[in-house]
Image 1 (cartoon, rainbow, N blue to C red):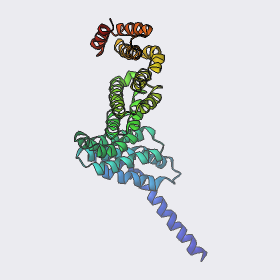
Image 2: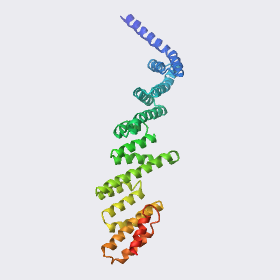
Image 3: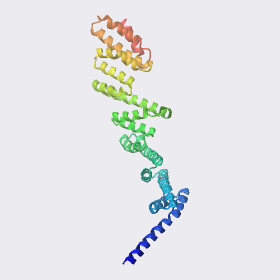
Length: 321
């Protein structure tokens, strides 16, 4: 019985040695297949190298295994890119995700990042058709996957934020625009400028809809959220909200700080016009007896030198004289 056991052990050991002896051959075949862009054969052979050689104590075989672990995610990534080029996006995503997973398993952060970058681009292309057709719900569902894979794909991030804003998800859209704006300016200057412009556009649209509904407290709440990232815009819309509520005392109290928060002449002029209008409203409410408010109205209307309110300020000044 002992002899039989020893014999069986010897057979198993021989089989193990035989399997390991195939490793260099499999590895060379995999490298050749990779070089010829035959990724399916390369994947099969690299996986076999890892499976058969991972328990070896032979340094040559272990070296093959180590290199196979580096090259296997490359093969999956290249195969995924190949499918993407053919328009087979589902297979592309399958292979690219496999590349990212294997790269993570073997501690290859660079290769994982490369795979995720291509995943994001595939999702960007997939969602682009719906986005161009203004089917923002469908586009957002696709872009979300791509954004998760690579948040630094700023074009797709911008499109996802736009989808959210068009769907009425203002806060979600602003959160992504804010992340774009916090990226390194030397590399992402154009994206930051575009995100900043989009933030202003959708914020103005949101403010207009709240004003139309008479929800001035909603506008003030928006300003509170914006003050940390957009102090100039926050100051302006807060002042407009109090003006809409006809709380002229509050407009006057906040006027100078709101003007100081602005970064250009047009912004300051917009604030000065609102403050001038508040003083003018106080003067009118006094049956034209509050001369101090009249003088302040004139002072602020005279400061309106830029932007869309210049002519209105001139007309107000003429009426006060």
